Picture 1 (cartoon, protein in one colour):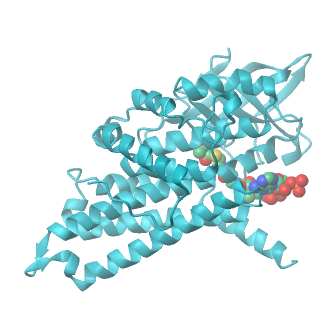
Picture 2 (spheres, rainbow, N blue to C red; picture 1 turned 120 degrees about the horizontal axis):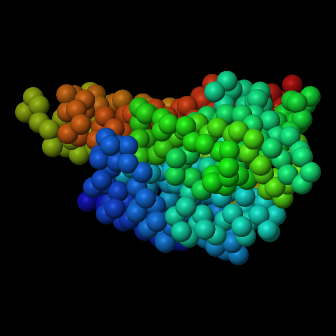
Picture 3 (cartoon, rainbow, N blue to C red; picture 1 turned 90 degrees about the horizontal axis):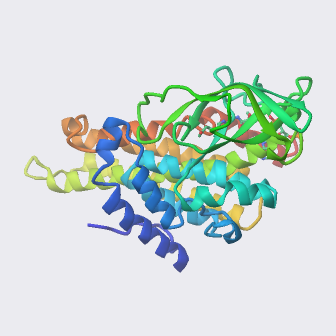
Length: 388
Ligand code: CAA
């Protein structure tokens, strides 16, 4: 059955949204999640239905077709979706934070009118291209170039790990518009994926979140009108970084959903499985695991909601978002590992969802900055706070 295991009382609007997303995910995603994973299927019908529910423009102003909601709303929606399908959680989270969220924040009214409504109501998804085959964590060290010619820019290079890349209708591309400057030489462009010269690489064959596509995007003399630049020339790195701050809240929320699914699975199994004359949920060894899992999940959810709350109240939230992402992703790895341990052999086979949760969890420690980069961001903020 559907259980409510939240740790704080959400505002009524948010708890209603949570219930809507839970009911949708239980009905529409849970029954197909294993197949989406196995066959690497993008859930296009479900994404269209999520568009109808307003979930593809959570933080976008109503004026541009969005729901005009906040990042706490995005967090609860992504958690509930990820609880049933981690891959769909990824599609929704990245689209909302790194495409719709960035455009809503820094786009001009013309850019928003052109590139938001269809991506919110029609189930078209957007993408974000920062990493390259030769640069991931060291994001500023990119080699894709943008050269100005008359009233347009010409983009050349290869972007990597572009989530939603196969299905995406437009991409926010970061490219070096000044080769003599480091991060200050990076600009951001909105590029429709049907622009001549843009090609999509093969769909990455991933360990987890297999419903979500990712691929390389190859740019070969792609002509982009000057009015498609986001912000000013040289703003691209900061636009990307502040977008990634929201993406870290989204990925933390995805990790919460995967963790919650693994908790549900472990508790139900432990409650029904008997050994040594009793349900194993009564065995101290299992109890210790469950207690630690539940406590870490609750702590991660509090950190994630705190980061969202800071953003929603216009306070600095970079450190909080990194802490949330760091803790929730490591927790997801921990909880899914222990879920398998509690299930034993049944955790290791595809008859049960535990092994999928374990594979889905792993990405949350990698994308939008691996754990090691979250250490760096948090430690640099700490040093600043102490005046060093
Ligand atoms: N918000 C706004 N501005 C920021 C910022 C933030 N969160 N973080 C840094 N900046 C600004 C700084 O203020 C600085 O500006 P000034 O020069 O004006 O002072 C500028 O950006 C450069 O900052 P740093 O010197 O700190 O930059 P750096 O080159 O040392 O890199 C880093 C910092 C933290 C390592 C950063 O590169 C980083 O976060 N790397 C990880 C990248 C990442 O998360 N990639 C994931 C890509 S998305 C993805 O995974 C694909 C997908 O589809 C999911």
